Image: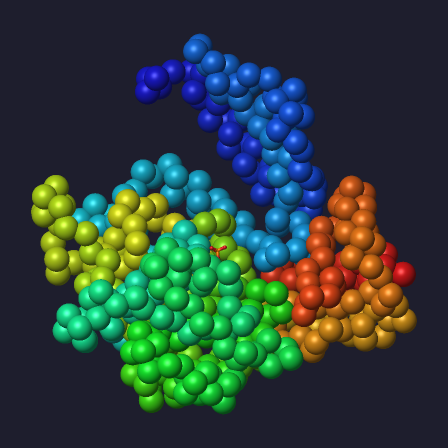
Length: 453
Ligand SMILES: *Cc1c(COP(=O)(O)O)cnc(C)c1O
């Protein structure tokens, strides 16, 4: 199976050509989902005792399977949080795969870990984190939030000198917090208390202070972290981070900031002031696979004091004893052990294009998102639900029912024009678009607004 023969040469050519052609598609087809039954009929049996051969498997992928995946990098894929990896980052992902790097320890993957740390340092500097800050790339914001909160709980218990070892912890977060924060609470068997937000979904220091004051004394004792969101997923709203930092200081709590989507905008001078206070966080995440133009899957997780994370996460085992404790082992900083060097595509892309290109690409997406909001303001049939802050715009089609929104959305995808799904806002079905692709234009958004007429 591992022999190198001429058929592998043919396959190599085919795979490289396929990859390059996919990267060059401008734009790729939007494509759309199919049922398992349809795929079964179209793909036939692929896993067989004799194998169907690489060229045939690649044909099935290209003709049947890939078209059953919606292209998240299409400029009119505007649902959820799209992705828009740079050419350099995608191509380098092939190199990472080809290089069989184990990036859990410095001993095995030091060169790759060094480069990942360069990319992490750029992000730490954007956030104003101190020189001693550090972290690791994990699979996504969900893993990043969980790992950060595990570190926070470790510190709380450690500081209590055993008094809280059996106490169920409590986390305070804003109403706009991502579902992964509640999921982290479930995974950790900790409670999550949600603080009321303003009409836009922003958590303010005052409401946070009120929520903390009204906690029962028993609950106050169990509280170990506050999670603030720097860019809510549904509306792109940044919490009052300074207010959250003040409360963490007053009550000696860990401040975790979830910037999985919005943290990228730290690089955009036009909105940087929204993030004031982030430099006081204990931990912070941002997903390069969202708005930093890297391929899946990648979340940058940073700690002000990585020693705490290491104490919380480091695994001990006989076969790991040879790993040197004084070296930077990425496994030590999250809930994982083996890991791909998933920060390398971002590093390579940063090295290729320079950080100025990132700043201007993010500014471009902000301008386009806000240009689209202007179109909505001017339109007769649509109106903004709230003023956009980052690159998410939430708006309504006047007088439409939920069914009309869903039907419009399905038809738009069926016509291969755009992928825009409804969301809900205070119980009302509305529309939302999220721009992270610098190739999305105001004309693309105009087409969508017109199709709602
Ligand atoms: C997307 C998102 C997450 C989850 O990130 P994954 O990479 O999908 O796990 C967490 N928090 C926020 C604010 C997000 O936008």
